[in-house]
Image 1 (tube, rainbow, N blue to C red):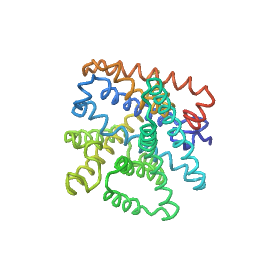
Image 2 (tube, one colour):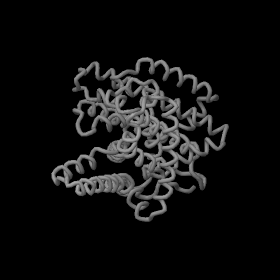
Image 3 (cartoon, helix red, strand yellow):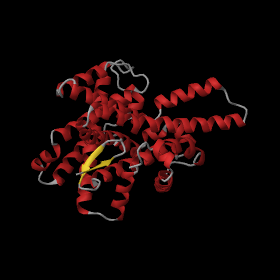
Length: 361
């Protein structure tokens, strides 16, 4: 059994090849990330400034489950890392996640500082403040999948894998005030843990024994997601109401929002995973292989998109108006540009070592 590096810096086992279905699911997820950002940033300044995207149905659909889907996959893949010594696991997380964050933030901030110097507008205090904020709070999902494995490692090694500890930790997290992106990490925590436990408890074989037809499981997941999605509104976004029970909504209301948000995230993730599995079982055409390829380079796409969508796309599309056709075109062009950029940068040794840590794949 060979070991293949995935984008979180962990390994999963395969028969001398990558797991095609997992790559396809990740490719689908990263496509949704790019499409969601294009809706947000590529629909013109008025749409962005008034936060009109929060009321867009397609945007709601994407944001109800796309990052939870990534977290479930990350937790599932992390299970195999637990076979290594804890010290090795920690070093892997540092190398594969924190080094790219440091390198990319440094590169972007230094570039911005150079431009400000040319304009004679550079201020040292502002630079240090901005650099520190970007270093600690940008790429929040990478930080989430850095912290979540550490908690899993603690529970599995120190608490002997007692499952009730995961629930207790989540309960404690709910009482922590939302500061410094902590709400985003807490939001991802249950998805990561469930993905990890699903692999640990041999969930794949359990699913095969319990579910004879994928269609039935898909129908149930779609119905559950559709029913939950009817109630998805402005307060359902993690960015608008956060997660702490000490929030503005009051403890009871906030708890209801949190439970609902986690529920629809799980329903959407299960729906997407089953649907992707069914597609991969039946087809291996160009479109399917292309999405699987995007899954292989999803780390690079995620990094590049986080900068291009917020910095570049808004400047180009400031006069645009919301339009589905425009979003599709933007996404096709974006994915092509990102893929080309990742392939080029992968061939530059220093970039591959620092910005991708151990490679885009």
